[in-house]
Each structure stands twice: as structure tokens, then as C-alpha cells.
Image (cartoon, rainbow, N blue to C red):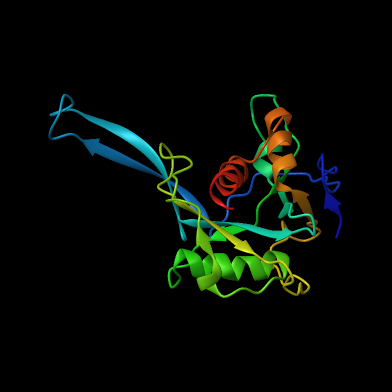
Length: 214
């Protein structure tokens, strides 16, 4: 597993062809039209349509897993992620369909966010930690409140010396072929200042980690 000090390596090469599909099976997400009838405030007596996104599991956990070098530097784990919507924009601005991201995943109905973070860390990086060892990086944030009621919970955990297994992944084609790297945390934050495109949750929780973790 390479360690990155000053810049991120190229993302794994990826190419795909997309075609619209209208499935009869329940979708992972769905857009739902709501009619909002206001009963108080300056909008009282008026109504409007509002489109929002529903999802089976709505909240997410994001994990800053890090190790310490002999010199005391902190290195965080990143994983390459495929994000087809970046390349499938319909405004003519096609972006690369991949990003380097912190490990993350959805919180299932029977899980607490900290439990989901522990599970995702094992699935995506092959690292087992007890949920109690994960430290919250402040309170949850809402990434797209105008579209979905998702909350994102950030956690940090020191995995120096912890054994790394082969990641089991979640069975999705989008996770196959993903690469895992370690990056110097402070150098990575400096890189984000000049990078052309950065995953928002990754930068946010990395900076929270740098600010709050000794």
C-alpha cells in the first residue's frame, strides 16, 4: 500500500457507457413530489410543490482512520470511489467519474452511526476496530438539505499497528477495483486548497480531524 506525502496519485483508470433504464424494482433512491401547505408565517395560506429525495438508508458515517509515522506524522487512509453522476451531467460539463475519499457508508436501520462506521471500515479497508474506539468529529452535518434529509456523522480512529485484512467490500460493481492509499494528513489538506475537484465530506472531516485531534 503506497504512502503519499505531497500529492495524490492518478485515480484508477475507468471507462463506462451509460444508458437510461426504467426498472420495475424498487429504486435505491426515489424523487418524491410533496405539496407544502403553509399554515403559519409569511407564507400562511399558500402552497407549493417541493421535490425531495427518499432513500432506504438515509444517514451516513464517514471515517478518518489514521496511523502515526515514527516521526509522529499522521497518515490518513483514502479509497478511490466511482461517482458516475460526475460524468453524466447533462449540461455539457463532463467531469472525471472518480474521487479520492475517506471510507464511508450508509447507516442501516438496526445500527448506530458508530457501529456503521466500524462495519464500513472493515468492509472498505479491511481494518477491524471496536465501535467504542471511534471518536466523533463534532456533530453531524447535512450535505444537501434542499434535496435530502441525510445526516453525515464523522469519526476518527487511530489504527497504528492494527492488522489489515483483504477488504470484503459490499458486493457492488462500483467498489471493485478501488485502490487504498495513505496520505500525510496535513499535506493532504494543503493539496485540497489547490485541487480542481474535492469530495466535500472528505475535506470537511479531514479538517475537523486536524483541528481537534492531538
